[in-house]
Image (cartoon, rainbow, N blue to C red):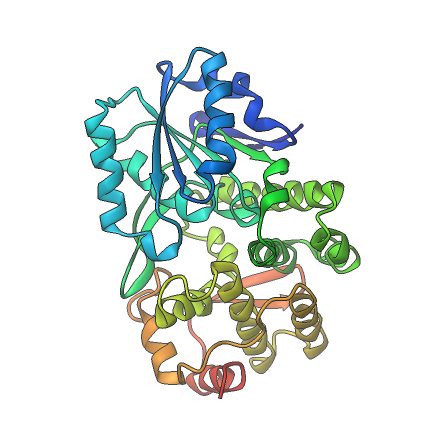
Length: 361
């Protein structure tokens, strides 16, 4: 097991990475205010891992209240959130009940928001079971549900007590979900660590082949990068926005197509190509670097062009993005692989040309 710590003072917490962590109740039990947890999971993950986690917790004297949600981004909404609240109230869960998010990014985001708001806030723990959740959404305390007009527009910052990334769970991950997670891994190299990007180019086949050592390194390095940025800017008032490289375009794709039509990582992959293309058109990034990013995403089996929503629809959707300020859309651009920056505004002609060039005709 390897551990990375998110340095947020009294709100800091460990991220444990390794095999067999679902059986390590000793990593969770000391963090619980009372020996009772509510495990929020999905209909897909529950048959695979809920009983295993519940048995481990029972062995440590911790009772488990299971809450099983429907699968998919389409259910990251008010109705599902209200269902979680109903289950917590029916089982008389109080402020000492810790919520455990067992699943992918949708489960983690929704359970985290429930924990942030139920009885004005209860503790929670992230147990991510997808690559995307392990390297990105489980770390940093962002919790949210979607709105029909924008992704993750209703939420709160609420840091977990701990994150347990069990590498064994990646063995049951569908290939499309693995590829979607690799999009976020590639993002971390593109914005912050050029040598890591080089390593990804050299080791992508091993990652796609579920090589445990390669995956463990990719998860650990991604978590280190994200944890360092979060420690600098917990509530995204400055440099944390760099982690949204590709997301302004990607969130527009998800909202425009309908949540769940594309996986989040697929939308982010196409969004990164768009952001890199915009960087090239603005003269901040060499074409060869943008081509390297595109090729790596293609090799990972990810989309490198957005759907044909039309430039005006993209612009309308991006204007609702959380990173917009005073009606202006902010973009994360690349200066080179491993170095990103925040752009307060970009020329409209370059943006429209990018949307035309990088989306379906």
